[in-house]
Amino acid sequence: MYQIFERINTSGRVLKPQEIRNCVYHGKFNKFLLELNKLPIWRRVLKSDVEDSRMADIELILRFFAFSKIRTRKELEQNQINLVKFLNSYMSDESEIDDADCKKFACQFEEVITFLYQEIGDNIFRSAKKKDGEMVFAKKVNPVFFDAICTATIYAFDTIGRDKLDINHFKEKYLTLLSDSTFLQATKQRTTNIDNIKIRINKACEYLYGVEYEW
Image 1: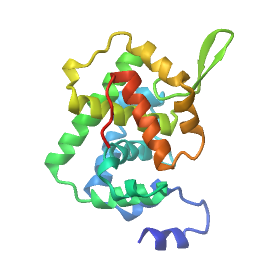
Image 2: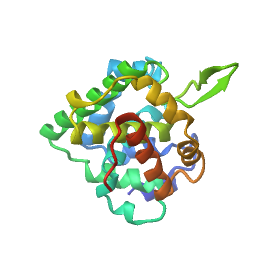
Image 3: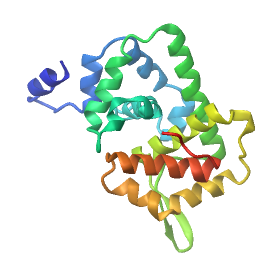
Image 4: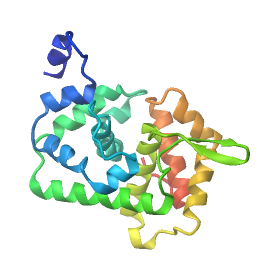
């Protein structure tokens, strides 16, 4: 269905992948994503009260859940994922999510985003460069930073426990991650390559939480 809609989407403004998903996968999960996008803490992270007309903000929320489950997905067996197909597949699988899982997913998303925002602040999920001795952050959220940091945080919450995490000097740990050359290379080149996805998540786990991600 997605491919059919994509082929006929040729006149006027060409729709982005998440706009097509909004039309094709219009079940409970899609409604759930639309509601999560209104969360005040999420809008603070994005630094905008206005929802994106092209649904880039909603696609980020979809990525939050899809990448957190990547180690259980068949795509992990490939050398490289097709991001559009990966997100399509995940959204299709969750299209008729039940109310209990909606509540569980919503709590997880809000808890992770709130924790990271409180510990790191307005520049969370943004790339940075040093200028005149100071870190200058990008204006927009970097999707691959977002995937790696959220997936690592979910993993740490699940394996260590939110209340047992060592969050001393957490912001400094985050800035060290952003300066790691291996992490940065994996965020700039062949970003959908499975090895690079693993590198990003592994590095985020290592620097932020001192744990090793089990694939």
